[in-house]
Length: 155
Image 1: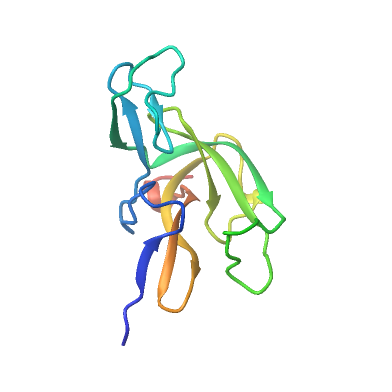
Image 2 (image 1 turned 45 degrees about the vertical axis):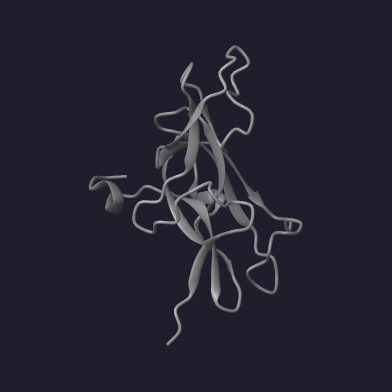
């Protein structure tokens, strides 16, 4: 029996940890002013009021609240790989991270549509397969609505 290799999707290397149990987005924080960046800043602090150039890599919040959402009814251009023979629309959310205040875009897990979402709804980060080829699963982060099963209380 062969084991499938799991790797971040092309272009998302270093943006998240592919840990299935506790995945996190990897951002940066300016050591001068504390401003966060995601994806990681290439040229220092993104805060225009700060001249800091020293950025430290930090794990970002795994939870946040839906800031906005829509669905992708068009097939994204390459290098996006359609996981099926025909493009199936999927939900996308802009999520404001709980601690940092950053807004991060991402797909919702399969089975969640825009009809299942609302602004302010709590979601959490998961890692899921974006597409598979011969022996490799290409991973990306996605958002999953928080339910009573994940919080231990009512949703």
